[in-house]
Length: 111
Image (cartoon, rainbow, N blue to C red; front, side):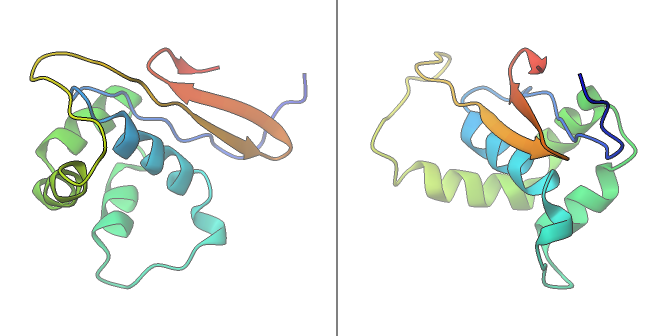
């Protein structure tokens, strides 16, 4: 297996029914060198603030980030599936390419 030299960013999902948001964060965090952010971007700030944190610490940071929560909640009410409170109906994973190696990022971690 080829060893990657670039860090693979992963955050632990600690908020129920947030796998879409977590998947989006995984995709953006692992491709931020290819993206441009507004200087006052909430997403840019979150990624910069959590770059040196563990996956668990990033998950806790996401829990407390009210700006990301507002966006998540606003988009979630427009979705086609409504999940009952306290239940997990679906799950999303993210595949990212880091230096030619495919990573699967989901509840079980980086595989």
